[in-house]
Image (cartoon, rainbow, N blue to C red):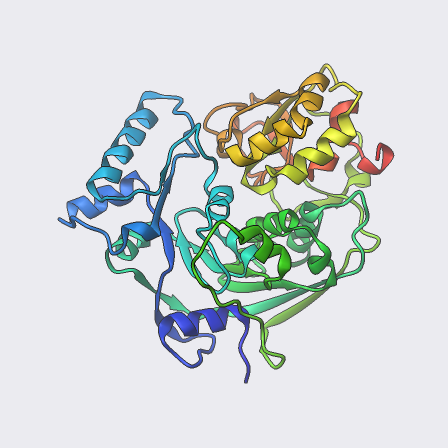
Length: 415
């Protein structure tokens, strides 16, 4: 029996010829990250060094910049731990960006690698053909030993076919996938996402899909590597890598076929990412805040389409539009391309790279009764502020089009 992509990566990192779902294996980790409480745990154990400082990355993004004394103290401790544990890959706010954008930009994730990161959306790196999963306090063991145990997951295959309509983006594809299988449909499974529509999609679109695949419950989300991946990594890393592809006779616990040819733009309604409806079914719903950005949709492509839609137009007076690039690299590229000129002229507020509103910690917190139309990845109750607020999720095209009218609007009406 052949193997899926994640099975191949786990086998390779476990020093095995093959693995099958349900087996427990110890596997070597290629990259990880750490937070203040991770290092506090290490310190409490008397650990004075990590297994490989060059494979550990620390990013200050959820608290960029700190909005209260407690957060400021936590970041202060993290700076000290960077020095104590000799970790050079420390990326503080103002200089770099959000972890899930920053790591690929810095060449820290490569095809065929096994990555374990502290953040639930660490499935993101599957867009680069890496098997990447979320961990939390398991990171303490990874920092000490450079390995971790895994139960080999079953794999689910999503085959996405057809030609994506101009009005739709990668965000619409992943919302369709989540609505198809539900938020627990891929629980502790590896989601292989493939097909001609994925191959035709931009790398940014794939990035978005793997990021939000976490909302299916997936342990891993992964795509095959191609020239779009290799071109992006050129000049960003000089480390060799070995991409993986699934065997023709690989076994999947479920298969989903999705044709996007006639798909409408999708909108996830409160309070669940799987509560997805075509935009025409929710058109006309008013909102007060809009957000284009985050690690899910804070790339150059996202601001390009927003600027295209809003050029020469104004954000509705009842709407406040926040624009948040996922990294300083994206920030500079969008500025140099003139996208920020267009967006600010339309009435948007361009911010620095930060998780900010998506994490509900600062910068755009919602009041009771307020509604946000956002390109972020979660719309749980209270996610962006008051438990009495509402969050709808949509693509940058849908958000930008809706900002003109002040109500949720089908981007096909303005594109």
